Image (cartoon, rainbow, N blue to C red):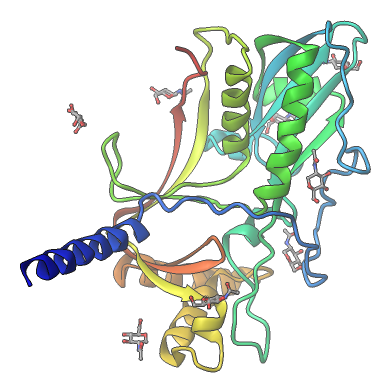
Length: 327
Ligand SMILES: *[C@@H]1O[C@H](CO)[C@@H](O)[C@H](O)[C@H]1NC(C)=O
Ligand SMILES: *[C@@H]1O[C@H](CO)[C@@H](O)[C@H](O)[C@H]1NC(C)=O
Ligand SMILES: *[C@@H]1O[C@H](CO)[C@@H](O)[C@H](O)[C@H]1NC(C)=O
Ligand SMILES: *[C@@H]1O[C@H](CO)[C@@H](O)[C@H](O)[C@H]1NC(C)=O
Ligand SMILES: *[C@@H]1O[C@H](CO)[C@@H](O)[C@H](O)[C@H]1NC(C)=O
Ligand SMILES: *[C@@H]1O[C@H](CO)[C@@H](O)[C@H](O)[C@H]1NC(C)=O
Ligand SMILES: *[C@@H]1O[C@H](CO)[C@@H](O)[C@H](O)[C@H]1NC(C)=O
Ligand SMILES: *[C@@H]1O[C@H](CO)[C@@H](O)[C@H](O)[C@H]1NC(C)=O
């Protein structure tokens, strides 16, 4: 009898621990076994990776080649707004490579297939309850480094030198990473600002690709230069412990929670794209009311929805130092 009680309590403890484990923070970014074709509804305003290799291939280097690695950073959308976003330190990150043997150079970057807005907020389509996301992101590898673009209002500095053999191993990893990490995530969600804050969700964006690549290079044996300024843009949301809501079918499907579904549609409505100036002014008031006054945010992560009980300072953009790998 005593033994049975003991067994039961062990079981209970196990279940309890497992439940704790289900709420692992930060929620791990989900990897997929392949990348699905994007829905024809998603139409890019600017073609993704126009000068990349057609099949996403990366040229093979000679093993004995010496490859210089560059840190590249420039204001987001510089081609359209010049240095405007640079003043707010909203920067785009990439990596450059230059072969000593051939003199050719290359750029590797990871970004949205359908631009940032589409990765941050969904579309509401008439007659369809579920919000629709065009949130894929991917790696783009192409020949050339546009020196002027990176240098003028940004950064172009060498950070390491690697062998052709390390480059080839990295190339393989970039392709695997590209096939399994398929969607963009704009926000880092934390309990507060500061080094010991609870992190609920991590972003998955261009700078995370650069940081992952540096880390991979480091593990492959690359040595990084020291004393280089390496700050990155991060977009934060601040909230108490997030609450899991469900996925598209459990919320918006026939058996879903109608009142929650309707609340979520109302939440996303002011964030829609293609608004007139007048609409936008009203939308901004609406967003303020929901996020700051009502303290609500609905986050989409791993193709699932979460409720964030928002708290001050609600939202923040930082440009913080994350050092190059060194041990
Ligand atoms: C976002 O996606 C919509 C729907 O495909 C498209 O009309 C719009 O142009 C996209 N936004 C940008 C900035 O590309
Ligand atoms: C990454 O995936 C995208 C989308 O399928 C593709 O266009 C691109 O060429 C791939 N990039 C690399 C470096 O494999
Ligand atoms: C750098 O910023 C200035 C000022 O906004 C802009 O005129 C210029 O086009 C930018 N440079 C590049 C290479 O885009
Ligand atoms: C990359 O190659 C182009 C074309 O040869 C050259 O103009 C540019 O200066 C090179 N940039 C770097 C960083 O090597
Ligand atoms: C963060 O946590 C560490 C270890 O628990 C502690 O030493 C440090 O003082 C904390 N820092 C802040 C800013 O709270
Ligand atoms: C949504 O969640 C339900 C319940 O957890 C699950 O059965 C279903 O497979 C999920 N749907 C998708 C598309 O992931
Ligand atoms: C539906 O969602 C609302 C808002 O999240 C919640 O208060 C309510 O309990 C849910 N109803 C059911 C039946 O799950
Ligand atoms: C880079 O980040 C560090 C600490 O994270 C900060 O002190 C510094 O001011 C930042 N540099 C710039 C140019 O913003």
